Length: 129
Image (cartoon, rainbow, N blue to C red; front, side, top):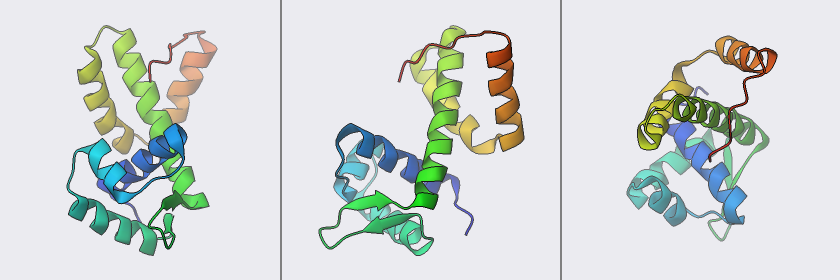
């Protein structure tokens, strides 16, 4: 199943929330993303059916292996792009918004080439997230 951009955003948010405190519920996702609980419910159903998340009897959400892999990919892209743009002088909020769009459209090949370029050229992009 191909995950849409919004699904990738939801997976990334689950990962971020898990990293912050462990337990993730739909209400936490809705608050973090500033969306309705109904929107989260529909997204979680689709992601569960696609095999990207699990939901237990207490409605706690966790990432499957495949869901974690995709979420980590999106988060790595987002972090790199937002930090590079901020490092170049782009306003932080603008950098974050632009990074969110960029992370979904770049190919894996191009992203890996960018990472190699920064590494080979000794360009240190400070972590800001």
